[in-house]
Length: 178
Image 1 (tube, helix red, strand yellow):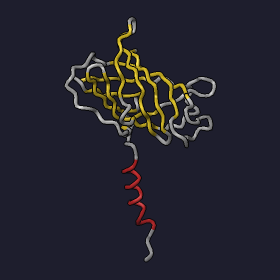
Image 2 (image 1 turned 90 degrees about the horizontal axis):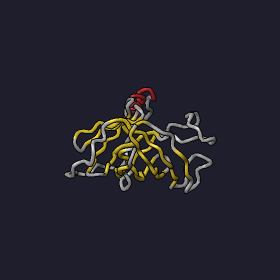
Image 3 (image 1 turned 30 degrees about the horizontal axis):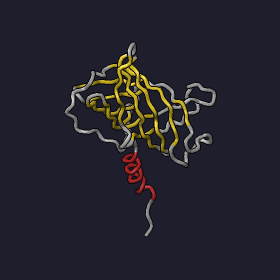
Image 4 (image 1 turned 45 degrees about the vertical axis):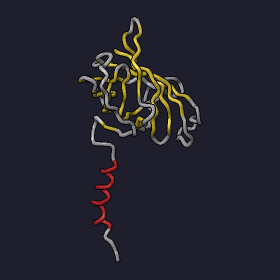
């Protein structure tokens, strides 16, 4: 039996679009992390603008970058995080491109989703020229940030997120209000 390849084209397009992240921006990127049920009152209203900074540590082999062996560390480039809180639930927009869901239980912010995490280049600059735009999903088991009260700054969210893309890593993250 001979198949007409033009007859298969719509099927290939449907399968490819079903596997895509989402049309956007803003994009929604899946991870394995889920949000817990929560009855604890939020420690504070996080609504507003925040920015992240931190260090990415490679935790798997097979990463594409030549300079990314196991346990290699890279500084991340800062991104803006816009928080919109309604009770315990938080909608987050990262750098006006990526949607992440959050839920704050007491002083712990749980995250679900993912975003693009750009890294500094070899001369410690964030010009984004060398970034490939690979997105990372937040993995269950390391998807929480803890709110800490820092005098003179206000609340800072700190924690280690487990990230998965083509290469597994951990992101020791600090979110500060702008």
